[in-house]
Image: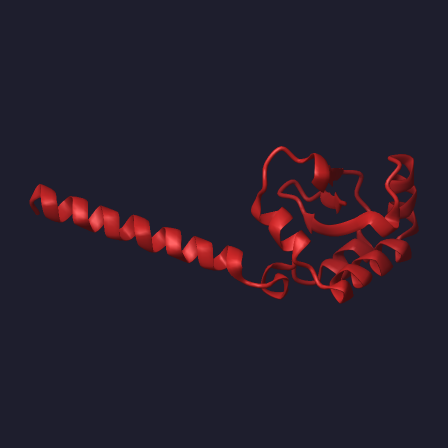
Length: 118
């Protein structure tokens, strides 16, 4: 394959991957909201809790995007799940997190729970 063909192929693949990524960001929160997060939060019993304040985050990432696009029903379900887990409520209270300000949650790679607060 000559250089021009190789560069054209690389450019086409780069553009295609960029377009597929931008499509993922553009989809609604229903597509990106973590599956079964309410059940996960209700049954969470670990000690690894990471609190991320959305207004203080240094950069916009995909998680912040889907959190900001969440529907009122999604947020209400998540808040209800947190309230149903008394151990989690105590841990969040100890970190001065107001439950009504919770905007999203997801399971971290280490098995902990990441809570997004607005």
